[in-house]
Amino acid sequence: MAKKHHITLRQEFDEHDGPDTKYIVITDNDFPIATARMYPLDDQSMMIGRVVVLPEYRHQGIGTMVVSECEDWAEELGYSKTVVESRENKVAFYEQMLYEVCGEAMAGDTFRCIRMEKEL
Image (cartoon, rainbow, N blue to C red; front, side, top):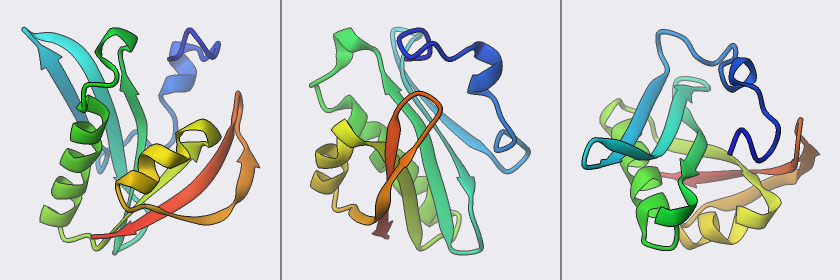
């Protein structure tokens, strides 16, 4: 995704990548095919972001698996809500996972995002 949207490797890592940040990587025979990161927003909310599935692995339920793993992990850590900032064209994906839109579209560096939340 970074190359497609002209995001440099340096931009992939930001102030949210710290000691409390968690990463999920899904592999196929030790080859990474999907990833996500999550970090605490507050005592009750965990932000899920950087959800990416390689194009040749899409439409196989892997994105759903990645987000579900993040939700399960957040709940195990004691969080009661997960938050995503979804690209506009991915809102339906998160709505299928019971996320609700909770804000207006906002401009990101390379695309517009919509904040969505889910109670765990």
